[in-house]
Image 1 (cartoon, rainbow, N blue to C red):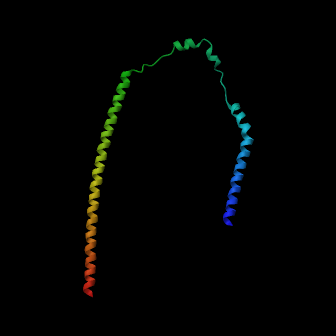
Image 2: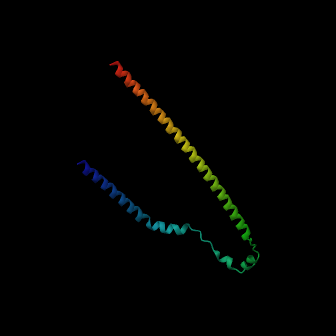
Length: 132
């Protein structure tokens, strides 16, 4: 019975959400269309076509981009990238070596601890056997 009531309650909630969404859409469908055009500020660009633009074009100064400058900059960037790659490679190798040494030290420490624990356990059982 509880499952049926839960399903009925869920269906009612979904149907209410769909009805509210449809109501909101139909109420605001026409309003959103007209409001978008009223808010826009349309500029009149017709004033720029009055013959004075030829004078403005002749007074413009252009900057020479210079292919040599771009090539030099690209070479410098390439060298910097190569240096960074070499440095990162060295750092990665150093980190790997350090991790390897640390792992070996940890393995040795664990082996020593295991041997110590094993000898303690043997002593414990040897003592208990002799007491009997």
